[in-house]
Length: 66
Image 1: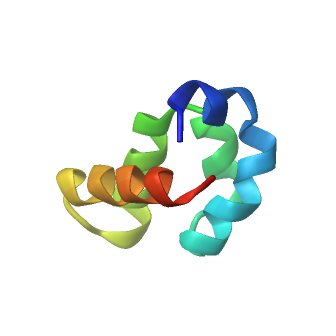
Image 2: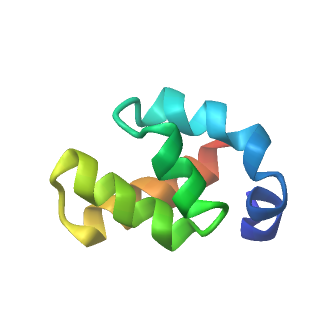
């Protein structure tokens, strides 16, 4: 999955993101607004995981979403 595609279609992907990371709020997704680094930061905060783990999860999610 191409980062530009996700960033460009952010609203369409928010549902899939919330399925994967249910602790994220609408406000979290609004703040991230297509920025995958911001998304990883929000995941890190909500789930209390390391930054590298959050980024890895986002990268793995991107690879699965088509």
